[in-house]
Structure formats: C-alpha cells, structure tokens
Length: 84
Image 1 (cartoon, helix red, strand yellow):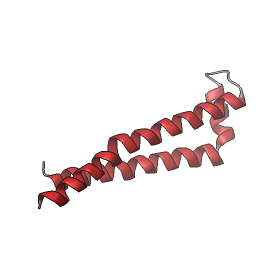
Image 2 (image 1 turned 45 degrees about the vertical axis):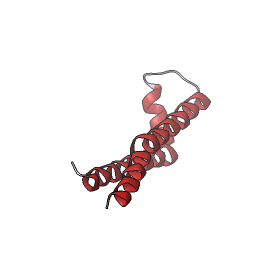
Image 3 (image 1 turned 60 degrees about the vertical axis):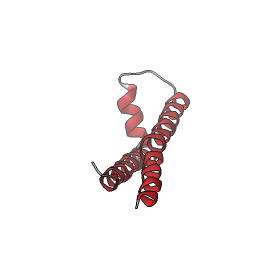
Image 4 (image 1 turned 90 degrees about the vertical axis):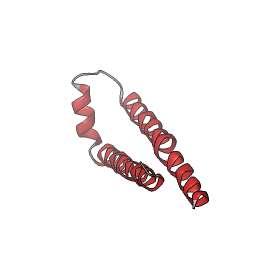
C-alpha cells in the first residue's frame, strides 16, 4: 500500500466516522425522547445519567477518531511531503 493510498484511506475513515458522530449527535438532539424510551426499556437510569453517558461516549468516540484516523493521516501527509 502506498503512502498516498494509506493517507486517502485514513481521511475517508475520518470523514465516515465524523458522519456517524454527527448522526449520533443529531439523533440525540432531535430524537432524545425516543432514544430515552427505547433505552429505558432495557436500562433503568435517570435522565441526567442518560445524558452523561451519551455525552461521555461521544467524547470518547471523537477522541478515538482523532487518535486513530486524523493523527496517522497527518503523519502520513508529512512523510509523503518529505519523500518526494
């Protein structure tokens, strides 16, 4: 796999992961009641805890995107600019 192909792959992974994060945030913002009722069938948690769990999970997911997609992408771009 070439540096260009690897960096393109990581960029598309980041784009798709941010799309998932945006869909999750949109669902949480606009369909929170539905999500709360759906999850409330299985888990008996308070509204505050439900919000905190989603907020924390979105933050961890975002950090994962940064660490596993964007940082390697930037590193490969730096390498490819010095390679030729």
